[in-house]
Amino acid sequence: MSQLPGYDDTPFLTNWPYRVHDCNRPQPRIVTPGAPPSSDCILPAPSDAVMLFDGSSLDGWKSRDGGPAGWKVENGYMEVVAKTGDISTLAEFGDCQLHLEWMAPAVVIGDSQGRGNSGVFLQGIYEIQVLDCYENPTYADGTVGALYGQTPPLVNASRKPGEWQSYDIIWEGPRFDGDTVVRPAAVTVILNGVLLHHRWELIGATGHKKVGIYEPHPPVGPLKLQDHGNPVRFRNIWYRPLTGYDTP
Ligand code: MG
Image (tube, rainbow, N blue to C red):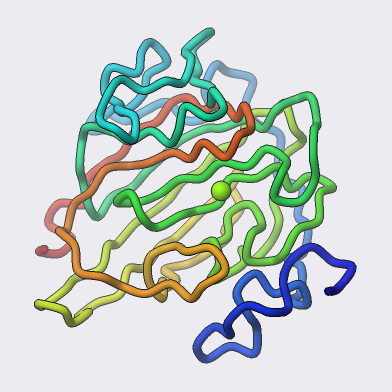
């Protein structure tokens, strides 16, 4: 194995000279984002936004087994409680503009994928990585903002652990005709005001140490947040459906 985090024994990604989580894939260049505004949230919701988490409760969320979400809510944010599992919205939606804010733990513990790891799963199965990547090398396709296991972000625009960070994501879900993918999912991701992906196509659902594939599913699904064992915080989560943009 290489000294760098990652793998040299996983399958190759289609049309790329790199393996899934390849330890030799080039690291994204580091960009220091501008300072956030000194307000309670980085981007207040516009008038037509659907609020998914306003800081007050997890009533609109559920655990893996369908019961109440086990994460804690305090001071206007939710925080992962390790081993309570991923949580998902009761709401299901497809193509959207999604905004959320998150914070990696101020107390730094672990390294690589073990530090401040969580994830934002569009339609419940397509992960945009959440990770504390401030002075924390990891495999490129596991960097914060990566389409996990597929495509590294254009740059590493991390803020320091303990600082709020923002995601603005434009999601265009896949379309299926029976078992055939007639349009792959495409995503635009902005972290802390810095572009990470521009309408980049996904090769399939997120997997670990395997090449993602598509399996047919409805044009809507929940938003899922990952319990990877680290007390990552989230706040100010909302979306705007892209109605009229395309037909399912
Ligand atoms: Mg993750």
